[in-house]
Amino acid sequence: NHRIRLAARPHGEPGRDDFQHDAVEIRSPGPGDVLLRTRYLSLDPYVRGRMSDAPSYAAPMEVGDVIVGGTVSEIVESSDDGFAPGDVVLSYGGWQEYSIEPAAGLRRLDPGSAPVTTALGVLGMPGFTAYAGLLGIGRPQPGETVAVAAATGPVGSAVGQIARIHGARAIGIAGGEQKVARMRELGFDEALDHRAPALPDRLAQAAPDGIDVYFENVGGAVWDAVLPQLNEFARVPVCGLAANYNATELPEGPDRSGQLMGAVLTKSLTLRGFIQREFVEPMFEDFLRDMTDWVADGRVQYTEDISEGLDDAPDAFVRLLRGENFGKAIVQVS
Ligand code: NDP
Image (cartoon, rainbow, N blue to C red; front, side):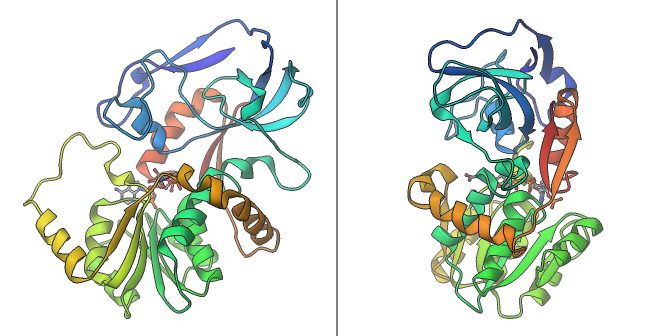
């Protein structure tokens, strides 16, 4: 069983020495467990947080642990009546070729109804994050303006398209020309490149009526450009801060937290952080029904960036954190 483990806690951007490749014997599953062969591995920004031991909403990985990650896997051997060899499931096998997991935590996938990789993206945790954060917290009304960054990724692209389904105007922000073209194909009303100069001015032009919902995926310079454009009573679901994940120190410059709190007060803003699992119980079923329909009828499109082979996972993960992924980052393992 080829695996990739955390060799050291990265300082800044993860490097090759932070990952250790090894191989161990494949074991047989105990009662209630199944042996799985990983087909596809999901790469997600939150894994960078788990590599650090800074306090967060989930416990960090320990050095020596197999790197965590969602997987689409095939049952090889089962000690549970509910699953048989050949079944394809959504699992949490991590960065390895084989995993042993409790059958109780698995979701069966139907390869006939949608490509199985969608269970890691548009029809899985990232798509659900978009749905729950936008509809549960952002609550866009018809005619309102919704802005989102990382807008070609699995979360951001779903946010923009769901906003339009709900009658809102969608402004997408992403890095580079290719991503701008992709945002246009996805139906965003405005598509802005955050790497090009003068983002604050271009954003102000793209949002002549201001911004009512800003779905926060990145923080950093994009947030600085958005804040002055927020309308009174704007809602900000705070989903992620990708610009900070590899940061090793605070940005330079004066402390602006006083101005931020001033804006929160005078514009009656709602900033609401969330972790998607909070909404699973009340919303996951609705999500799966709606999103399956929207994907089937083409109202929600998705992009996948699939790299080949487990060995490429560390590099593909670094590309994701740099914004060099084009769509949902996935590794085909077998
Ligand atoms: P993406 O595939 O969108 O990858 C992250 C993207 O962040 C990059 O592609 C890049 O896109 C963008 N980015 C990175 N650095 C910067 C920067 N300095 N400024 C602007 N953009 C930057 O990932 P996901 O769709 O999986 O996740 C999107 C966000 O949602 C992440 O912050 C993630 O942590 C968060 N998340 C939160 C969850 C929750 O429960 N709260 C659950 C799932 C995800 P670009 O090239 O466009 O700049």
